[in-house]
Image 1: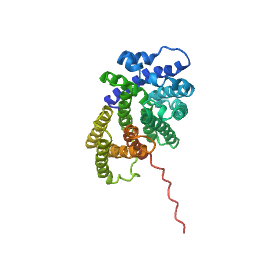
Image 2: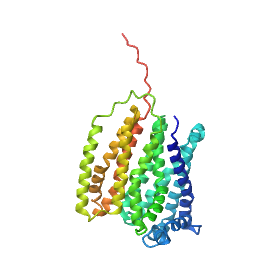
Image 3: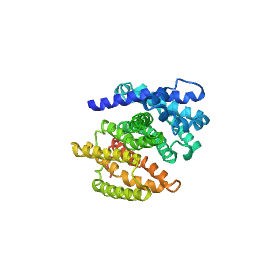
Length: 372
C-alpha cells in the first residue's frame, strides 16, 4: 500500500517538530539540577516576547517551585518520554518494520519507557494535585487523561502484537504516538497563539492549545490509522448497526443544544478558549463528514462512519463530563476540564473500536468427523 504524498509530508513535518522539541524538553528538566543553555526559554521568549513567555502568569513563573520540589519524578517523566517519542519516530517507519528483530526489541524498550514515564507523570500530578497544576483543575484533568491514555494505548498495542493482531497493533501504537506528540505540539501552539494573541496570558493560550489538542491529537491518529491495511478477511465481522448512522446525530444535536443553554446560564459572553474549541470541533466534524461521503470502499466507509459518529458524540460527552466534574470542582473549572477532554474521549473510543475491528479472524479448525 503506497502512502499518499500528503501523508508523507505530514509525517515528515510531525517527525521534525518532535525531534526539534526532544532536546529542549530533556534540557528543560535536567536544568532543575543545575544550569543549562535554556533552549526552550530562549526559543519561546524570542518568538512571543519575554513577558509572555517568562513573566507573571507563565508556567516558568507559576510552576518554578513545584518543578524544583518534584524535580526527580519530573525528570524521570520528561527524559524517558523524550526517549520513547524519539524511538516512536523510528518504529513507525517502514524501514524499521523490515528489520523485524530490531523492531521487536526497540518496541519492548519503548513499552517499558512509556510505562515508567507515564507512571512518573501521574505521580507528579498526584503530588501537586489539581490546584498545584498550571491552569488548575482543567489542565490537570487533561494531563491525567493524556498520561493514562498514552499508557493504556501502549499496553493495548503490546497486547495486540502478542496476539499477532498486526493491523490492530499498528493502529494502537500510532494512537499512542499521537498522544506522546501532544507535548511538542502544545508548545508549538504556545508559539502560534502567543503571536496571534499578544494581549493574552499564557494561561489562556495554554487552555486554547489544550482545546485544539482534545480534537486534533486523536484526529491525527485516526488519519494515520487510515493508512494501516485492514485484516484481509473481514467476513467474520458483523456489519455496523444502522443506528450508528442516525443516533449520534440525534444525540449530538441534543448535547450541543444542552451545552449552549448551560453555557449561557453559567457565563457572560464567549471567551477565546470556547471559540477555539468550537472551531476545532467544527473542523473535525467537517473533515470526518467529507471523508465519509467520499469513502469508496467498505473498509473506508466503516472507519469514517465510526469516526464521524465519535465526532458527533463529542458534544454530549462534553456536557456529561461537565456535570461529572462539577462534583469536585467549580462550574468554570469543570467546564474547561470537560472542554479539554470530551472530544478526546469519544474520538479515542472510536479509534479503539476501529483497532478492534481491524483484528485478524481467528483460525478455524477443521470440524471433527461425526461418530456413529
